[in-house]
Length: 281
Image (cartoon, rainbow, N blue to C red):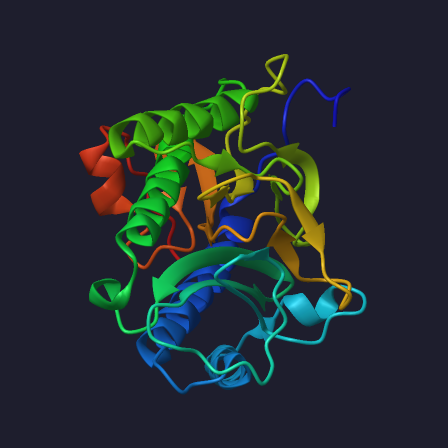
């Protein structure tokens, strides 16, 4: 991670497969988001996602992680990441972060969203602000990606965005540092890691065709956390709520494509003044 001066790029053929995997992830997350409602269990959401991915010719990524067997991670309220789907019944106002991965012909896509049971009108206003700030920081990180740029500029942009949102919202958001983004390709988690915060140094140069999964995790309070006895679920120590947003992104000479966004990120990238470089499947 620290010795390599430049990241590794993907070929057009490889990117086409990652775009196909990314579209499956986007479709699965859209299906799950539409099914989130009071009375639904997280296990039911998991089955929906698995069915969608398999029915569309893909394979869920997460069962390939040793010891994990589910299609999704479903993290509710104070759970930051890696929540295990099960018998938990969702209630109006819950903040649910849903993480999903899919494989097409050996290549991965990985993304996460945060949604509210009953919609934003049923949610606490501070939770809505938290989720919006987290998603906005993800796009700030994406906008910082450019060929020849430094990898760690991404985390700096994410942190700057969170700090700015905190000032605007009158809150001191916590940026989780124990879990970070990562390169992605024929394995879901690859080096180099992509911090969601500013670090010393500049990191490796971004090569054309580099694919990374950016995933800020932000809390309403203290960012310190612990893992529950199930060995997976990460929760805030102070019980404050958390949001998690993630996209798989490729940076190329012509611009950026968000492989796990239905439109490739075209609309958001345009609003941010970032050149859009579509990837065909």
